[in-house]
Amino acid sequence: AQTVTQSQPEMSVQEAETVTLSCTYDTSESDYYLFWYKQPPSRQMILVIRQEAYKQQNATENRFSVNFQKAAKSFSLKISDSQLGDAAMYFCAIGGAQKLVFGQGTRLTINP
Amino acid sequence: DGGITQSPKYLFRKEGQNVTLSCEQNLNHDAMYWYRQDPGQGLRLIYYSQIVNDFQKGDIAEGYSVSREKKESFPLTVTSAQKNPTAFYLCASSMRRLLGSYNEQFFGPGTRLTVL
Image (cartoon, rainbow over all chains, first blue to last red; front, side):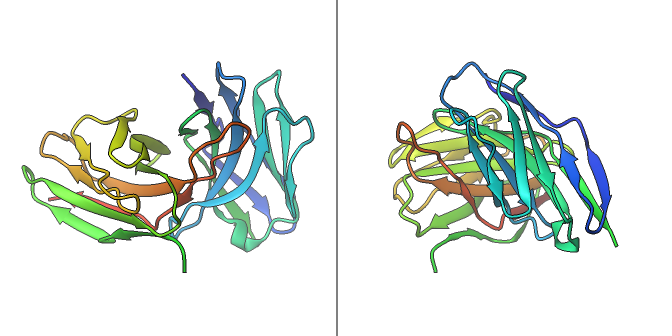
């Protein structure tokens, strides 16, 4: 079975600052992918970034980057230059052979 | 425009009634999924289907049923056996997973079900 744990129910950051959201996971599969999804108040799920477990290089997408520590089974998301539009629920997820397993989410608030 | 549609956006049900939530996609995706979202619990998988006429139970399938008669459609029925059906329901779809590829899931806008 796969599990995902997000230990920070809520986080806040000042606009233009940097924030890191934590995620740890457990899996017995050797071939898997990790994802961060964003859910704004509209409740539409949006893929932010993905990481292939077999790649050592950390994924980046503009202001979003991950710190993937495979041995520690850790997959944190760093948001640089935070913007008001980044305010949302953020979900970490692991994808194995057939399905995704999500963490419980972190609510991110951006303070102007 | 390609995408996933869910209807209705809001749904009200009396206790003891079955209700069906619609999910349609025109992305030509093989796989489709149903998730339930409750406050503070993230997304939990109800059912998923990798191909037409085949589906598997997820983590919380009790009290739910699905069908997959067409590639583009994956309706979810919430039966009277579901004890606490009030929740937000999300449908998703993805390409069928091939070895070495990733299965990004695309989500619909969701249906809010309230039991009166």
